[in-house]
Image 1 (cartoon, rainbow, N blue to C red):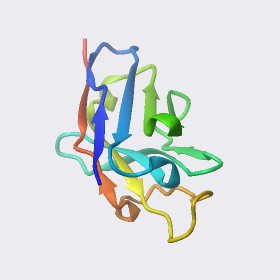
Image 2 (image 1 turned 60 degrees about the vertical axis):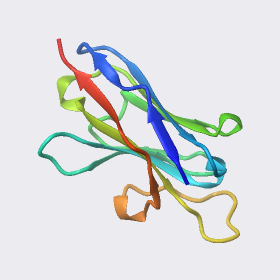
Image 3 (image 1 turned 90 degrees about the vertical axis):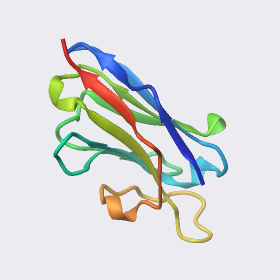
Length: 130
């Protein structure tokens, strides 16, 4: 199982980036998907997640109203649109997949708990600086 995160880079405060997370060898649409981030010297922090099926979304308070998570099952990809970025958003961003119970092909609710996620991408660096 492989997840490939991309889209990071250097952006000025107030700018935007869109991160992508693509699965290469499993059907991402069945999984609850999450985005996490880790800044230097800090613990990994949950950012957002999206459930399977009804695509219910959830956000950390620090990004609510600025970030949007979405998924395109036809492209086997999850996105994180990040707007109004500030230096505190600087971190390595990771996507993660939480496998549903056997036989549950839809309606698997996502969680902010990192230990629930089974597969992780390699991370993409986001740097917000002027």
